[in-house]
Image (cartoon, rainbow, N blue to C red; front, side, top):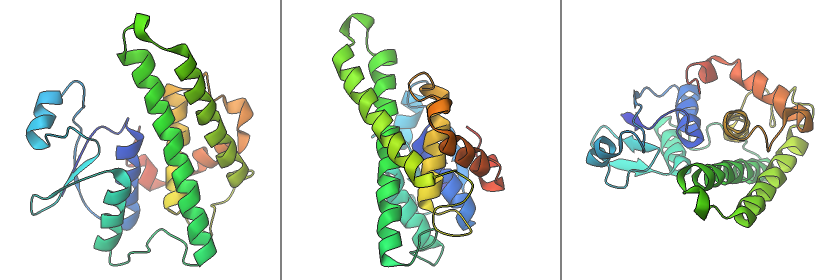
Length: 203
């Protein structure tokens, strides 16, 4: 099984870390959708990260769908998810918010770094940045002081997704999402990044 994409993508990284937690081995092929576009396209004409190439050659895209597949491979479709109905719904909710944060950061990157300067639309950037801050405000409230996992003694998919989103924010959007405003997320992220599964997949 091969995971294609660079770990500076939060979507690739959340899949890689999830596989580490589930104990599922994979080969990492760190192709860039920019610098390695032609090579990537030979593997997957969609040029979409992450791409998971299964042992039989079948390809999966979209990080959430890949994680569902990895959970099934682990023998437990509910692995890394709370079992209680209300808690599971809350975990899905917070995972969704973390994905919104990632999406908004990527939109800002594309708008400000890939588009010619004369075509950048500042009102759109302002709107997306507002959505980004709203997402992190929700996540900050959810993690509290950041000293414990959300649903027990070990991380869930929600914990992984939030920690990956925060670390990515400090790489790409630190001027918009400042540590001083989110102390709980700072501690939560540091706690997660110290785990061997995170260290095995450095940003």
